Image 1 (spheres, one colour):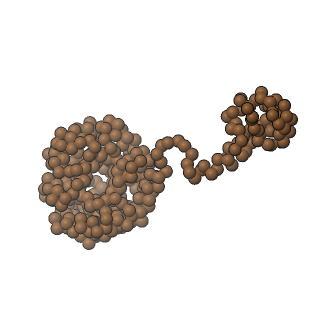
Image 2 (cartoon, helix red, strand yellow):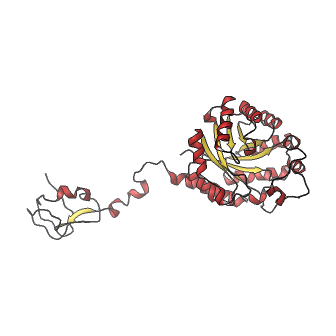
Image 3 (cartoon, helix red, strand yellow):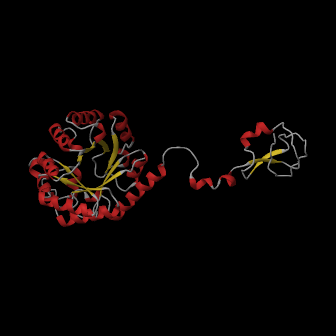
Length: 336
């Protein structure tokens, strides 16, 4: 299988600090992720003053603070983006960010970003989908909260706006932070691939690393996972994120899973071939056999090691005559 594209989702876990955002890039690079992803938005473009926080955000941040005020604290400036992208390049990791409004799409386009991640909340935002399709070389679309019909409609809108199916990957996702295991429904990921005809992956909000590894085993081509410097930090997403060592463990587990999946061809591996003779058997004499004696089920048996006549040729041997004498346990040989 092709290498899974692993996105370490920094999101807003920088808490509005450029210094913390730089550290998050270092953590993602050190873990071996393929990309580190932030979130790009203008708070006033993203939410109105009347917008309430999600329940998990209310539980993890100041309840008196509006969603708009929370977002203002978590904004990254245009200059921040330039510096973060440059730092990611020095660490040889792909810089990504999810735009949440039309001006942010323009900002990322001006930065030269090729891969655009569309958040689950934008899957029904037609003007936004058209704008992204106009600038992206590759699109990764999350589908939390969506029905299959909504996924199909979004993909159709992207294609109608100029991208091909080969440029689109749809991520199965659940927008609960954290997602309860019973709500993961990981097989829906494969259903998306079959129904929509696109590459598929998984954006994970569960605790731990089991589900991303399972998604890899089920054919995910992209895995996205939130991470943080410290899960106890204040902020909406820290609690459901991996800490640095856990991120390393997830990347390692995904790479191991890729290796164990192999190419699907059933044949002896190089490592096991050396065990062939020790594990398999040959047809041997079940006691002394005289020359001219007829081979039968009484005077033949099957024992290790291999190297003699394959036991699958048993019917071919039974009824033939021994051309010479054989000792007990001696491998049988046929002549003529």
